[in-house]
Length: 158
Ligand SMILES: [Zn+2]
Image (tube, rainbow, N blue to C red; front, top):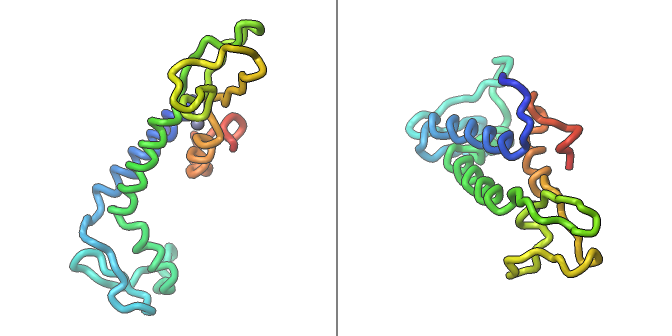
C-alpha cells in the first residue's frame, strides 16, 4: 500500500473511493438469499454456495445474510452518506481567542459557531469552547478502517 497518509480527511476520502470503486465493479443487480435458511447466495442471475476463505465448505446462513446486506447498492449508499458527513465536519481556520493568541483549527460543524450564526464566538473566553479538528465524529468515521496500515491510531483514535 501507499505511504502513511497524514491527513485524516484524505485518509477517509481515500477509503471511501476504494469502497466505491469495488462496489461499482461488482454486480449491480440485487443480491439475495433465494432459499432462506440455506447457505446459498444469489447475485443477479447467478446463485451458488459460498466457500469459506479456506475453501473448506459453505458458510452458514447468518454469514450469507451478512453478505447480502453488504451488496454494492448498500455500500454506495454508505459512501454517499459518509461523504456528506465529511462535507459538514471539515476544517475551519478561525481567528481564535485574542487573549491567548491561540489560533485554533476547529470543526466547522461542531464548534464554535452558534446555531445559525455565521460569525465566531469572540465575546469572551468563557464562551470559547472549540471542538478541534478532527472532531470526535470524524475520528469515529476514520476508525471504521482502524486496521488499515495508514490509520494513525496515536493521532486519530476517538
Ligand atoms: Zn465535527
